[in-house]
Image (cartoon, rainbow, N blue to C red):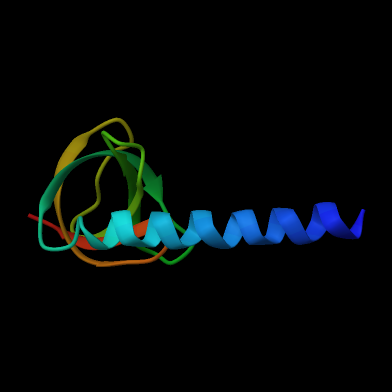
Length: 84
């Protein structure tokens, strides 16, 4: 069981590193985002066409509406940006 846990932790670490590299490559670009509503952070939230969770500042956006978002920063699994 310890070996399985160690292996899984190592796999997760590699996956997070790869995901962070991918999302960092999206910074500075405009992405079409399907709005899902408001995140716990207070920003609007949605997903890109490649299913990357995106939080963005801007006017209230209805769920189901497509918006353009300029990505300004990124985490391992999330983009943060502004509506343009």
